[in-house]
Length: 343
Ligand SMILES: Cc1cc2nc3c(=O)[nH]c(=O)nc-3n(C[C@H](O)[C@H](O)[C@H](O)COP(=O)(O)OP(=O)(O)OC[C@H]3O[C@@H](n4cnc5c(N)ncnc54)[C@H](O)[C@@H]3O)c2cc1C
Image (cartoon, rainbow, N blue to C red; front, top):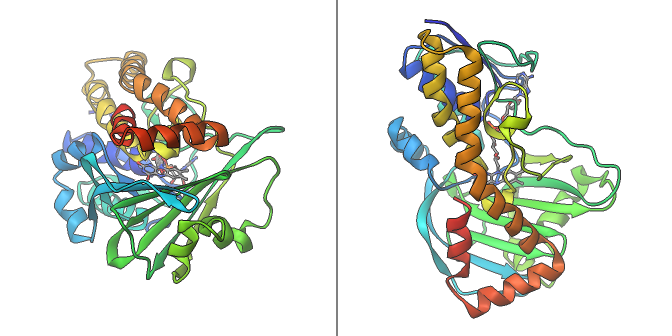
């Protein structure tokens, strides 16, 4: 069997490696960082990825590591909140610190070779999968998006997921393992924000009059879990317009407000595994495998990416945010509909 090289050991690369090892494909994965490590992420895993996790037999491992099942959501804006709402499917909430490490360990056990702290060339070639995460994007003018996340103790939640909207963006709260609450926000600014290392709590806690601020007043922050990212591009990309076999954010990023990026990374890996296995067995050439994976991923994700762009706009532009808020007040099923359309 021909061996595969995966560049990037986030959820997309690790899941792909594990699925390929289950088919006995020799796998070598390069990861620029190490495990465990904190990442900017809402840590809310929902949607079709959960069935991939089940097919890998990993749900119990996640549960045993403290993953928390989440069934409902409260959406708040400033000082008001909508009533608690059940979502169509339960989600699993687990820190990326634990999640990525668990899958990396499983991949090693399955015989995959992982080279951590090794940056490999992210170049398209036969037998190489690009799972390198989001493509950095520098903007000269207009809004710049940045993400912040940290864990805290001593925060009481009113639902499995709380989404707090503000004119600057949103903050999501969910309980993960060890009674910790993950506090993760996406914000926008016209100008670079140079002092995030000192001002992150101010951004995450929101306006002093908001419910979010009240909720996080007693928070005991785990300072070592703080991470940030900037230069985010939220414009969807198609595989057909890019070079190489790509999975996860290396292909396209879905706006984080959907809470579906991890699912797309895992689902994309699952869709890519079949054609790569056929290539490894000599049943298909690399160009055909790349084309087949690209087509599958583009088709599978087209509709949710379209709805996600709309949702991102509706939730994070102040005017459309008020319209969406009114719709949610008038039609209590509206958040569930949005949830379904982006999965
Ligand atoms: C603010 C925010 C909140 C989010 N909240 C959620 C949420 O609640 N739920 C959800 O499902 N999704 C969420 N997401 C999205 C989710 O985090 C990503 O979609 C997911 O992590 C993508 O996984 P990935 O494996 O493609 O990329 P990453 O997890 O970014 O992994 C890519 C890896 O590649 C490595 N790498 C890059 N280049 C190289 C190289 N040349 N050589 C070796 N290694 C390399 C990097 O070190 C990195 O570890 C959120 C994202 C943001 C920004």
